[in-house]
Length: 492
Image 1 (cartoon, rainbow, N blue to C red):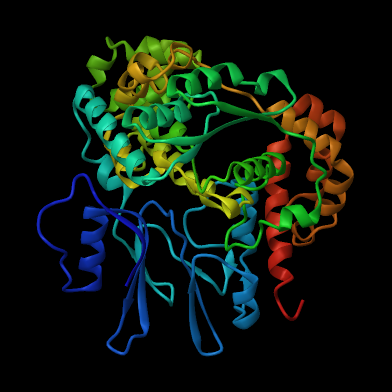
Image 2: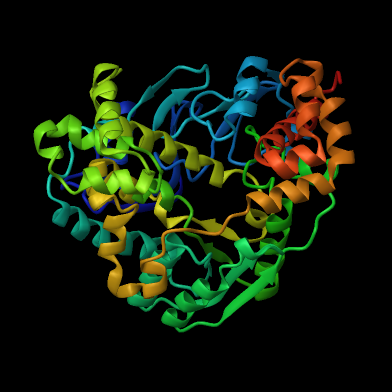
């Protein structure tokens, strides 16, 4: 039984699926199909035996057994919990890791008693699983010519945008950055109708990207709706409203933007909202000297005369000698066959699962992230990092591939909006709530967070001069998640 949206892979082979075994069928499907789907395997009596979740992770799959019934769901609703509550517990070590690395959502959930099936894995309900889709597999067969990578990118991106947008008019978030502009340019080139284009900003100059977003919207021939975020009073109710999933919500912790986008989409009446999320990892925006190390691994002598060496030095503000030293050390200390920047990119792509977590805007509109689609991810994994950043120009290959679709101001733009100061200020305005919620909360009681360290962070002067809002909000999202689940346990 296949549930969800399934499309033919652009690199699909001929012939039908190999259905001799569950594993053979799921492996064939992962190579020849893509989309947002879950495959359920059953025995001859109809009982569920195994689950395969598509490699993109776009459709969640969680399972548990209660009152003699096997439950399998993509959403953890209170109605299901009331009828068949799981016997849950907490892996506090794993929870500590989530507070420290909130976007590390690969592997088992820190919630025991519920199985969260991993993308690209065929698993049973007892926890045994086998990986049928691996990013390393694609990274180990690189595309050798940058020209081929550019051609394949354009073809694959247009296919993914066209397929995921469907046939109806859609909405699109236009941040003013490169990634959403590429998605918008594809919609225009494909002649797809756009009913709503949205740009949001905070009341600080460094967050205002309207000039760039207006240029993108004008190129698409659509009107741009601009909305200003209002101050939001933090509360347990607001954070815990999106904390009911098997994983803490990183997508909903920016309360102001979450509520603003949800309301704007409701007013516009759009059912699908496309975003540029995932583009930083896909096109390689990461600011790292390891971008040169990957070429050193492949062609050590030729790398010394390439434009990548001085380009990455300028980009990262490092000397060429330090880049060479870093490359040599990465080779010496290597833990595997993949070069270091490609390993960094794989981790960044995996962290994109956070964009699929529960949030208010996903309750009112279908959030679609074309740049996280499986065919595009596979393209990126096959493309060597030096191709992605030619001459040390971040996301340079993508800029070249779509230059004719982008406003010049966006195509040549190097920076992006900065929300750090805004979040620090917003956090400082909510310190009374945060001090009580965190310092007297469950994470402090279980010694998951260092109470003294958190107390020092929850200081207005510290936030103003040192920052730290992102670490605080990461802890809040996990605290809300623990409280929401403990509230569902009958013994609590």
